[in-house]
Image (tube, rainbow over all chains, first blue to last red; front, side):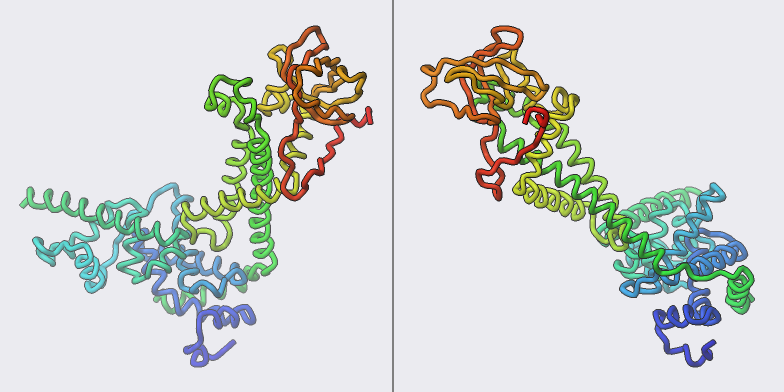
Length: 198
Length: 252
């Protein structure tokens, strides 16, 4: 097994090669991605931390099984996110349930970037927005929520989202625009209800 | 807590269950299988396109008024619907498989559709030029009853002696105004015509394929008022060579 300091500067593709040579090296891939992927799983599914860990463990086993299928033309992160995305879907298919949505306390910078991109702050207090953003996102269809999560919470570009969701870039753009429209509409509805109760 | 243990748990599971990465050849095999299925479907679609080109170019444009009152009606009657359905079906299958190749998802539906259509038509043009359109159409006309009477519009038209249309192969020249013809349904006909009605004498050599306008005078007797070659336009690369489909093996 390589020493931890030796692998710090290594690329993902090199870590894949090392893992194929010695299974212990796979630990470095797990360590590099576990936090990001755990957060991603929770963002798109809203499951508890324990359930997310179970899904994540299955993800890593699947990644290990498919190491020889990794295509270096693709970013490793896109590939591993794709496997995670598929695993979350199959997890829910097994349970015959649908993801319940975001359940995390998010980094406010990420939320602010989403708010700013949707031009929502004009007439609503920011704190209120931040508090309600999860509720609104949770009401969106899975496909819209996921593309928003990838773009604004995982900070992925169009090419990466296209590779993760296995959709053409044009479709990703369209999906994202629709997702933003849906979000705005849902947000307006949410705001109206909120105001009625004030 | 999780961050400390998950990696070790994963490695432990891998070791305990003796999990090994699946060999690369399995993934390659799957990729090749998808590509092969896509290319196969594309080729089948291209063969269908070759038959369509053959049928459209060799349609009876010069005598369409004898077949239908209007050009539009003639086109609708003679369109090779069966082959268009085949083409669409196999283009769809090819599209499906190409979309399921490793990077197929990167192409939009529009681009992938355009590529499938252009590839099918381009390959279909090549196959037509090589004579495959004619071979497939004629082989089916002579070997499949279903194709002859239901799926091939021209065969259906030219096997309607009661309506004055008959086509086939000359199997015996009996005199300057009489010959025997075998139609695609393997039925022999006695054909008569009046040479004085023809501005130029038809080419009545043995084994020539012809089509005739005229009338059925008896059960297997036909009187021709117009005799035309059944192949008007030989495929580009074949020039005047005629592909011999051997439907009448027993007679040769």
